[in-house]
Amino acid sequence: MATQQFYVNWVDATGRFLQTAFLWDTFVGLASGMPSALDGISNAGLSYYSYGPRTFDESTEPATALYPSVTDIANLLYSDSSGNLASIIVPAPRAGIFYPDGITVDSGSLGMVAFNSIALNGALRNAAGGTITSFLGGTRQGRRTS
Image (cartoon, rainbow, N blue to C red):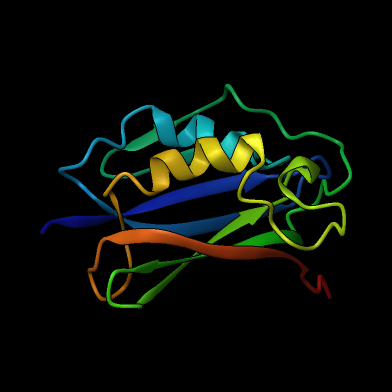
């Protein structure tokens, strides 16, 4: 079961930068789907992503929106069949992935359906190496900048 880190460098509309990373199975097709799926749930632009050779992606631009800053995040929680957890941090989340409360992630939103169709295809791994099988939920959180 070979896994590798999938790194994403984000930039928001104000020029702030954030890097996130998660484990991915090298044998299950990540390919071109993940960057566009991430772009579909975040207002931040992907300045580059890397899984193996560093890949530059200048096709996504940061957006000025309801949550434009990388200091606003959506914390997405997943588990494997044994209950071991994995978390994916999405900076500058798009407002459309939340319920009207603006806090709770709506798994039925178009962006989350598209993202989870890739994240739950057998490729995403947790720190214990288990294959992620379930989306448990997510919340919007703010981060201190000072």
